[in-house]
Length: 427
Ligand SMILES: Cc1cc2nc3c(=O)[nH]c(=O)nc-3n(C[C@H](O)[C@H](O)[C@H](O)COP(=O)(O)OP(=O)(O)OC[C@H]3O[C@@H](n4cnc5c(N)ncnc54)[C@H](O)[C@@H]3O)c2cc1C
Image (cartoon, rainbow, N blue to C red; front, side, top):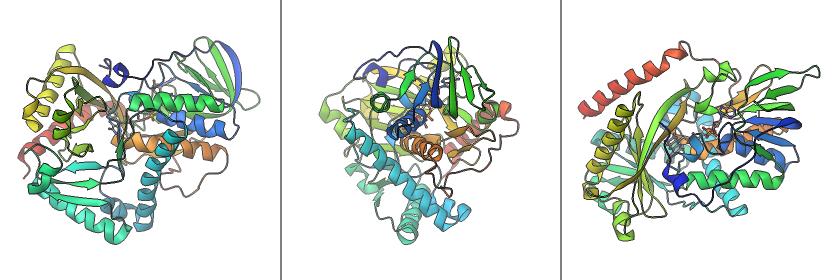
């Protein structure tokens, strides 16, 4: 799948980094050049820890350079659900962490003047059914009463025209703290910020094996070189291959696809999503969409293709979905189509922690990594620097691989069909 993303096609610049050749030594080696790995490198190197990132493709080649750029508060599932499951105190910490994650990104962008069109205009969760709006109202009440959070605003169906020019939704809920950005430009900016602190980043340098030497140091081999390091971070998320089976078997990769229109006159695109929010809806197979700084509509959904024909059908379906939401876009050209992998965990929450041999990891952000991955990269850095919070709300003491993981792609397919039926028949 992959294909050139609109973000890469409209990037500020195209940077090529060299491939690792020969033997080098560092305090910390990081595998994976997305938000998680780059943020860990940035925060480690800021504290004087000599750090290297190994990326198998280009920086941002995984999900970080290809996502919707919706920088969202919260997690998969309502906070009322997480409070029931984890207790109110943990839920409060989780929520605060998600707000801090967006503050952190804003801070990095401002400090390093990263040009990535960051806008903190909030998100709009659009209700697909009246019952979804009722759940949103309940959640708003819960958030105010129990979590002292007052930045949610319910939009009734008859007021939706103040937010969007569509009749597709039955109302919605705005969260004023969320943001959006150009994800590829942010990734490139984060990589440059890490390099400015002194970090080294190698591209086209796939980690092929991990061993230990006689001094108990980690040794990571690539095709043309070798890194020896005191500490190791694996930040490969949904792109985890066989470099570590435990991590690979703890993350379920799910394909997500996106299309982007040609640039439109500013008044046309600003009429679609009036307040320039990051939008996602409440269908089980959700749509997520937003305006871009160059006046396109970027529109995403889920889909896994096993052939080129399949792939065309998926993109056509997504385009039809876009026209169901915004019929006024009929005749507007689609300029980009691309896809990538989103990583999920069994609990549906992101994980941060260490393997038995001390290797650090963070992954499984669901559709929330544009905010949380930078934060958990920082958490990894703090853990390595022994400044970490042992009670971090997303810390997992022991990684438990998902049973029958290899059959999960089939499982995901089955769940998808089931959810499609639910969408069609639920009221
Ligand atoms: C189409 C799409 C839309 C999305 N939309 C949103 C959104 O709007 N909002 C949101 O919050 N989240 C969204 N997400 C999810 C979000 O992009 C991810 O959660 C986030 O980018 C994860 O960052 P990461 O650094 O952990 O992983 P990645 O960015 O995937 O980085 C992992 C990196 O590891 C590298 N790698 C793997 N194996 C090796 C190896 N052996 N050696 C060297 N390198 C290796 C890969 O090449 C990759 O670059 C979306 C994802 C996709 C695919």
